[in-house]
Image 1 (cartoon, rainbow, N blue to C red):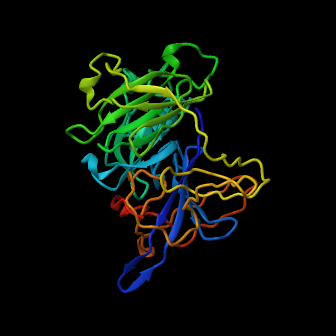
Image 2 (tube, rainbow, N blue to C red; image 1 turned 45 degrees about the vertical axis):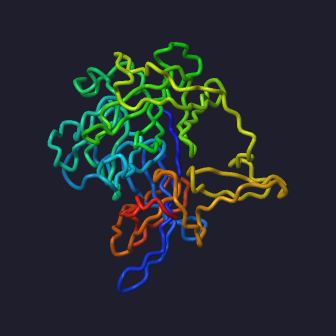
Length: 383
């Protein structure tokens, strides 16, 4: 399983709440090691870090006691579901492979794998790899978005479900278009020497549908060697890095509008989008392992997690508003799944979450009030 880290800077706007004013906070949510950790950016070298989603119970062999906060195995990018989709507001999606990780890819399936009651806090469902729909407090909304994997839900516990079909191998990224459709990528096998076409990565799109559940889909491309996470520009073009070939692709309309545009058993669109090789001559990426050279690394208002550097201090680089900055411009955003989201969160609505430390890292004590309601007003689409 590829481990990717995605950093989402949530700019918590200054809000007035009677009878007192509420401070503005910057919070970074990062998926790493299948956890989701939240960092309160307070100007210190080691900001407080708390668990926003713990993938497993403290005792996987038991379904008594306190269930883990979140309880999902998460990977990749976080995207808010836009209001225009018609789906229930105040939800976000992250790539999720909980059932396979907890119940199938282990010789000791967790006790919660046998829970069938959706009201039980240990319930995890039997969904193949896809995207979990989560509430703003980090809890799973008991909804999952994925392509079909026949026989997956009937695989005995502790047994290998076999080679996943395209769409289920390694879902990672997400982005929403102006119609509320969700585009995502399946990395594929992740092995650059694997030439089997059925193991290649893919670009897919899920439609809200009449039930607003994103349970119908089409594939735009099934021939990507290690597909990277998608990005979208203001015109609706989609960009995908094919890392196995060292290439970047730009996809332009026509895009499918419903599953009627991919009627075959393979769900591949009958009219493919325009696909062209894309190259960028813009700014220089900010290389994290190299400390030399002046940097201005910030989270982007319209991309999320983007890092840039001033090369020699003379080359113009677009100034990005993000972590630790105040006085933000108030302007419309192209989509609420961008990196910085306007939100209101009052300290008295926060809840304590467990802190998490790693070997060799400083002990970070969770503050008495830490983020639980992450983006209560992100659908305002303004900063």
